[in-house]
Length: 395
Image (cartoon, rainbow, N blue to C red; front, top):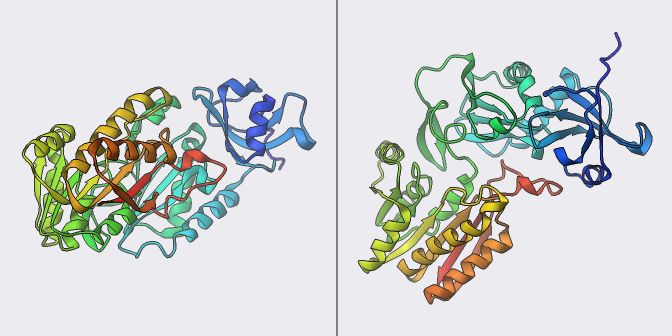
């Protein structure tokens, strides 16, 4: 039986140069002829000069609605079959074999960084949660579930396809159980602490996994009075409490997230307090009240969601870091993060330097960190490098 004839999408030289340099995306502006392809199709990619030889650029997922119209699958032109995708999944899972115990939480697939375009797979103990973030990976959803069940025999597989990026792909929001059965939350151990994760609730696929290693790192600096701002469910604050802090306060606008943090603290016999408040207002009030802390953690949401918002984001990052630096005692520690891809590491460091100068503080850089190892960066794909985390000491 002959393999199906695939549509050929022809692209400009600018897009071809990007693919040859290892970047897996081609934007709408670089597509000249879609060859009649439909969203979700696997297509051949070629330059406008023809196909074959150096003009043939491999295979990609096609999305008519998205600005990212092509996501490269392979530099070769053999149609990917079931075994092709099984091997890709198996390799991605094997790379994480030493990153989490059986009862832990880990990202098993990180989309393009693992050469599985648009696919996210997170494991919480023996439960899997997937996200299909482009039309091509969404079209293979049933296959992903079959292969994951073969490879891992999970108790249940859920989808959490409720992210804004799906609207850009012309895809509907869909969340629910895809395979197996789960009654209630799943218990996982993160950083030595017991957590209850609800796959269909909370952020991302149930909780944030990209800060796991940074949270454990922060516990090593725990002492005295600690403040976890933009705490969400207390990933950092719980680790600070476990690390031996005398006092830990979590600050977040979500009372529901703070209630979950308190429940996790009680579950692990830890003490902390919570404050439902706007972070900027809270930090300002603490400074007016001459409060002082030994450790402050800042883990805000992405202030820069696109290039147009970078200027405003810079002001936000500077203000929140300036206010945190003013609250720190001498020799105090600031753990500060940005998850905005559009804010580069160098630009974030400049913001921190400006904030320190305006706060009148001399600051040492102790550590420069990124996302956890289960969220690896692909060197030719800067979009996979988004999380920046600095550990600073005030002198």
